[in-house]
Structures are given as C-alpha cells and as structure tokens.
Image (tube, rainbow, N blue to C red):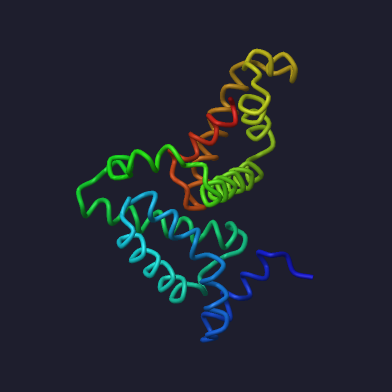
Length: 198
C-alpha cells in the first residue's frame, strides 16, 4: 500500500507523461495550498491565480526533476509557489509581503492552508535535523528542544563547554544549509529554531 505522498509522486509522474486525469487529480489536491500561499504573499487574488497557473505549468515541466528524498510533493510545490510569489513582489518593488497583505487577512492567518504549510516546514526541519552528525544534532536538539544551556550539556556529556559550542555552531550552520537545500530560506530555518525553543 502506498503512502499519500508516494501516491502523489506517482500522480506527478503520470501527469508529466501526459495523463489528463493525473493532472486533474494533482491540481485538485494542491491548488488550494498553492493559491493560499500566493494570495497571502501578494494580497491580490488575480495575481495569486496567475502564480498558481505558473506553478502548475512549472510542475508539469519540471516534475521529472522532483526527488522524493528532499521532501514531500506538497513541500516542493510550496517552495515553488513562495519563490514565484516573491519574484512578483520584487517586480513591484515590494520587499516585505506584509506591506501588501490586508490587515484583516493578517488577523485571520490560522487557516487550514497555513497550518498545512507550517506542518511542511516542520517536516523539512525534522528531515534536516536527521541529516546532521550525531553530536551536532544532539547539541541543537538539547538547546532548542530541551532548552538546556551549553554549560548543562557540557556537564551532562562530560565534554568541554567549547566543544558543545562548536557542535552547536556547526550544527546550526549545517541545519541552515539543509533547510536551504529543501527550499526553505535561512530566515525560515531560524524561525523554526526560535519557535521550537518557545
């Protein structure tokens, strides 16, 4: 039995091979997510729909390049949607997305799509952590998940505090690189660590 993401990977492959049914299924499954990301970034329904159209054309063209090991299909599409939306913002000489998002929309951010996007980011963060060397992973998890101080970890692991600092520094650097490989910006990786720490 295939997992939902394995099933969507198969649908993506079929779509790229010319299956109209696969494209319809793929679009129905992911269009709400892509549209919501684009609209929240751009604040304009028509532009968001244009981005949505561009994203699915790109998925159709680049679907063969999708690698399952680098994240889910939804995460892959989310990254493309954010990238295309930010490109449009730059063309409008708008740097900060919140400048163009209506205030009332900012107050209702807790949508199903936003929660889905947050789950995708957390999924990417978890995958990125698993790629770190054990010492770096333990230091990052101990600091941000366990809220332990460097001195506490040094004492618990019976290693010099300088070693813990090095593990943590290299761990965070590598974590950002891993998140970047998955299409999530350094700021998002930092935000993830901050949110986990809370």
